Image (cartoon, rainbow, N blue to C red; front, side, top):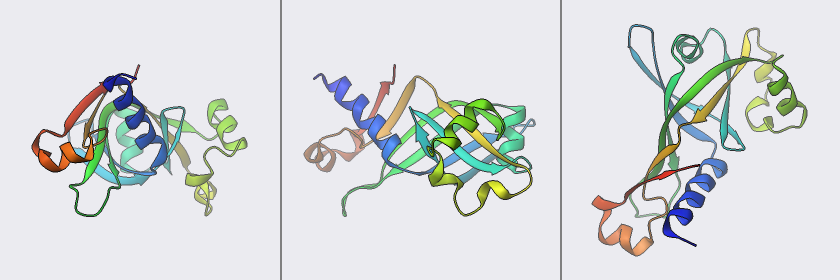
Length: 159
């Protein structure tokens, strides 16, 4: 397996195996907003439960371009690892057939528990990563990361 394919698999696993990220949006007047959110990943797409009146949902409704940074847990003593990407997001009503199918199959249970969808105005954000994903430390051999942490950045096309 090539180094690129190993990195691609490590990135895909990091996205799928985690559930917290920082989501950056921008208002129509280019005022940035970053918030930590829980997500569920289904087939490489991230889903976030929120209210349609939240700043992130309002921003996405006006400007679908987002950025995401997913911290990746690592061993004690290592620098923080992460996966980051730009992507496109959309605000989806719970009645959207795509969302209904995911909800009915339980694929979004991790973000919809605790009555999250019982609130008036509940909706889901659907975040599609761009083709190129950047990383820090993910997919880098441990000895290389420890020896040369300044050069532990990578990027890969997800395909």
